[in-house]
Image (cartoon, rainbow, N blue to C red; front, side, top):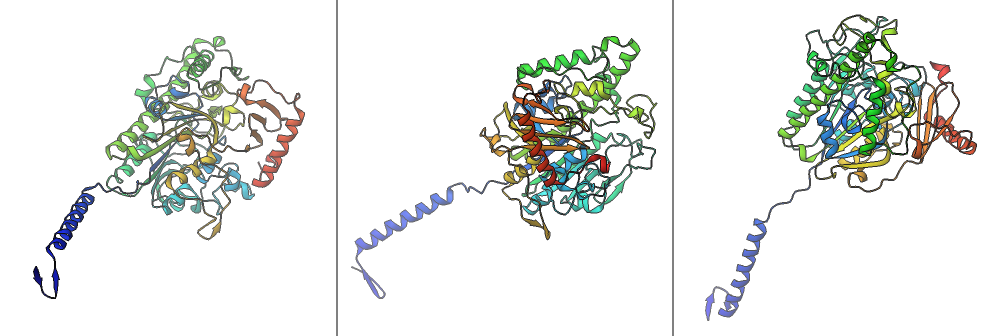
Length: 540
């Protein structure tokens, strides 16, 4: 018997309790040695938007231009072959940022106020941007590039959720300075936050300046624990077609085979890689474009130069995206970052040399002294295999290349034929960030988002598709419901196409299916009343 003050315990009991204590201590040591599993960090999000880039311009969508960075993202990510934009710069940006149709955000057309709420020309108080919502969810937010969703201060990036912003406010700019493109009083404005920035002829090439700002913003995120949202909106390859001489030199002479041969070449590549369906026909050459073989050698040289400049602009943009990816890897954020790449509309048919209000038409092609465009012949190539251009609601104007890259989440080499639209970008970002779309924001009741999350596609699962998608821009209008599309350019009658067998819109079926025309036309009218579409002839 061992005596303790106030108690007497038998030795066997003491030994038993000591054994229990030893086991408990060992268990505690084991638990302490286990790794601590923190909650997974919220993913970073980068959206990269090209300007006036056609469906077939990058390598992974059929192009011959060297776009090794984007092609790598496509190989290691998800490609969507049926993704849509809103057909032009401002409306597309409004939809991307807000998850709404452009009219619902106040930008049914451009940034000029047409005197109607849905065409006021700047983001309204009934919409909220991706940046505003992600900032509330703990993200830091940066934008670099073309803004173009309102010239009034309430619509500036700095007042729409972005912590850091370097923005081109207008539709376009010289790539070497901020001098006016027009002689009608319109100016070119760059903002750093709320401060205006002047770019001179010795300024860094615009694509590089946008990239530099994005890269610097990424460097600032190196040691931060919170996630970031980066929106990079390149002005390239929007006119004026201006490029660095060394980039142009790599492409000069490569387009002397002409636009007819190049459209066929791109189409063949699209067929071989599965980007387009084998049942589709290549659309006819645009009616205003001459047969390449009818041109003189001097004319061929002029057109070769124009396309060489355009290709150089795309090439330089791709290299710049490579710089962003390099920095992302350097700060060790690449494994937890979603990157989305797309274009705001199809290739352009703008013939700016024939516009009376454009300055500096006769300088050396591709330089600061030349305001020029590649026009409908090469725009028709950019939009292979589709018809028409930017500003049109035929497929050539609204079909966008789309790439999503998300290491360890998205299986590389995935091609999806699901239908998506810019209105889906905001819901997708919110789903990735683990947050939701609110009923109101800063005291304003919000218009409910029109989009759906595409995150199921990241894991090769089906998405709940849209019942229908709609477009209207300056009287050009369209509705897509399942595989049926009803479309009409301004002042033209409706045409009907079965996109499953004829996405290139070569066989108008309106006369064969009048009931389908009536059904879709009725759907369009209901939508147009809902979002505030106004007869273009009344407000243009």
